[in-house]
Amino acid sequence: MSLNVCEERQLRRDLAAAYRLAAMLGWEDTIYTHFSLRLPGSGEPKFLINPFGLMFDEVSASDLIVVDGQGKVLGGQADYNLAGFTIHSAVHMAREDAHCVMHTHTLAGMAVAACDHGLLQLNQISTEFYQGIGYHAYEGVAFNLEERARIQASLADHMALILRHHGLLSVGHSVADAFQIMFYLNKACEIQLACAQIAALTPVSTIQTQLSDYASQQFRKVAHERQVVWQAWLRKLDRMDRSYLD
Image 1 (cartoon, rainbow, N blue to C red):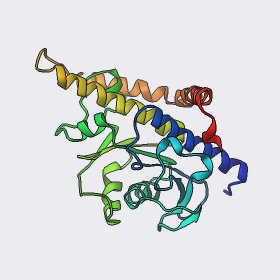
Image 2 (image 1 turned 90 degrees about the vertical axis):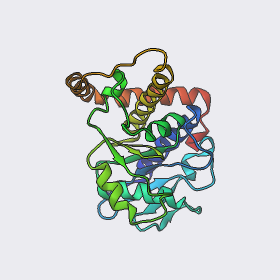
Image 3 (image 1 turned 135 degrees about the horizontal axis):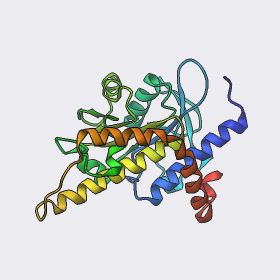
């Protein structure tokens, strides 16, 4: 499948929109963390990613660079962050269905990533991720390309990954999918952090396994609604600032 100019422009705009929305939601970590989007085509994956040095609220469609699985910049004049390349290329090389990959260092996400038990079944939002999250042991800053094989094994076929002592990662068939998954994974982490703060004052209970399983199946049945929600996010962003389209 070849990619025409109009199709690539739309993919660039969707990914740039995700960066702007992430900045609006407070997900950015100055110039670090990354979102990527695989370009259609056979053979070795090629994907869009942010150029190193831009804050999330600065990223526009034309800024995004194209990188292949070997780390060669195929489009754009800027360079990328090596740790970001290691993580994102690992997923794109192993998961053809993971067209979009999002990685964050949010306060709540990193707090849960430091918890021995990971994400707990504390609320309806967390049930969406029941049996849907992988866990990856911390190996230091991801400069070592050999870590890619272990990232791939940790993610397996899950929709999200908690990188221990590091942060969160989501994958999706589209930007809409990956963004919605990250939004609610981060919210589940925020709720867990809030529960930890009140646990000393009042008991906190977890949802029973059978009920978590049932609720997660219910969420899978309405996964198609992610695109509807994404269009709502885009309308909100367009009302605020349309410069991401450039």
